Amino acid sequence: MAGNFYTVRCSDCENEQTVFGKAATEVACAVCGTTLARPTGGKAEIEHEITDTVESR
Ligand SMILES: [Zn+2]
Image (cartoon, rainbow, N blue to C red):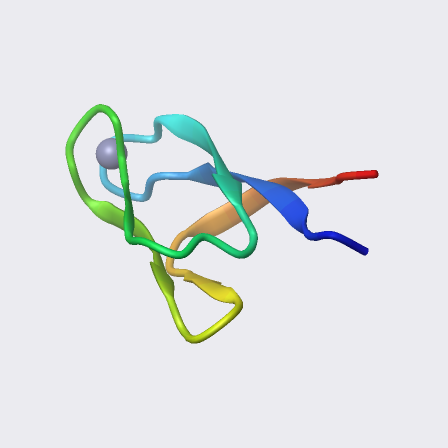
């Protein structure tokens, strides 16, 4: 498995945004700038509610 994409809902503004499960950099909400995910050495730590998971092929 190459890695998943997650649909994450920002808990601050409820914007939904797709985040790569192995993001190497911090991912900020495109609307309010809140950090949605931060890298933890390989696998991103999602700090907000994950509403959907999309497996890449
Ligand atoms: Zn937001």
